[in-house]
Each structure stands twice: as structure tokens, then as C-alpha cells.
Length: 132
Image (tube, rainbow, N blue to C red; front, side, top):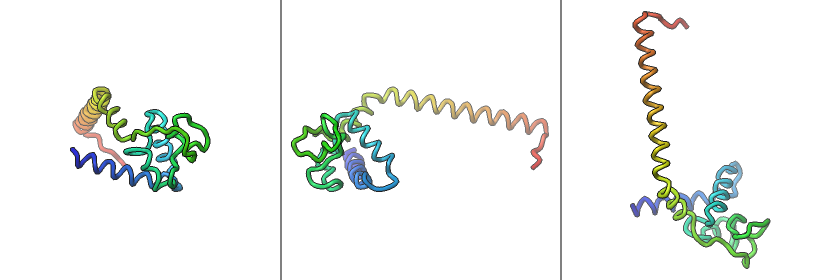
């Protein structure tokens, strides 16, 4: 499991490098929402942003009191906890809900397959052909 955690953290840190690139608005919004909602910053901690945004600079959503440009102010209080552990805890706390949703999707897929096979059998028995 440690190898999985290490690889996930590595991939997330590599993903941070795309934060300010063009055509990655979805990634930027995802990071901003996660950091604001979960009160965290970066993958392991706030210093993960330094190679991306410059020394002593983090996204504004890392600030405890979010305001325009607060991430460039070194005296602003920041969320120091990394988001990886917070997101991992969220998944752990909500695994029953996620499992239930997954099972519902599975049941719908199975029912859809059963209905399509029934329809196929009905069409096959009546001898009707599809004319293109």
C-alpha cells in the first residue's frame, strides 16, 4: 500500500506542474475547490507549490482567509496540511456511500444488459431483419 501512496503522491505533484498551463482550467478549478473545501494546501504540504508558482507563493485558496493575491504574501496564514491525506480520509469516511453508488450503477448495467438480450431474443424469434 505504501507503493500505491507514493505513486499517487508523485503523480499528483507532477499534476501540479500543469496548474498554470493553458487548457487546464478544469485541473486548476479542481485544485482550488479541494483546497478551499478541505482546508488544505498542496499534496503533502504547502511547499509543494513552490516549484510551480515560485518560492513563497501558493494559490490564493491555500490562505485561511481567502483574498485576491493572499498567496503571494508570506505573512498570510496558510492551510499547512496537505490535501492527499485529507482526500484519503474523505474517501475512507464515505466508502459506504461510494460503494452503494457503485452497486447501483452495477445493477443498472446488469438490468440494461438483460433487457437488451431479451429484446435481441424477441427480435430473433420473430425473424425480423434490419434493413439498412
